[in-house]
Image (cartoon, rainbow, N blue to C red; front, side, top):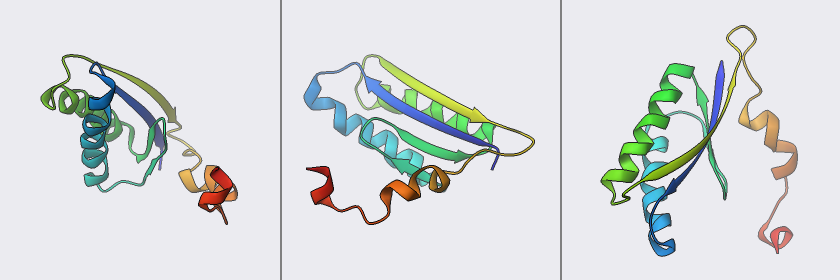
Length: 105
């Protein structure tokens, strides 16, 4: 894997309409069959750079089609065509091992 992208989609709508639109974007991302990690602020995706950029682009259209008059997205890209990048698991496993809901209270 040569790239990892984190995307936060922020539809320009009222607070109560944000989550349903973001959910449509996450549903689309997951349907692409790539390794993903959904967190409270962003979704991280692993794959090839061109495919990841296309996913980011499509998320903009999904938000608009879902009723947002505008959308802002914050995107972080980790790209290393020679050696690859750290995976989601390499970055998070040590923090997620053994976690349960009580640890987040």
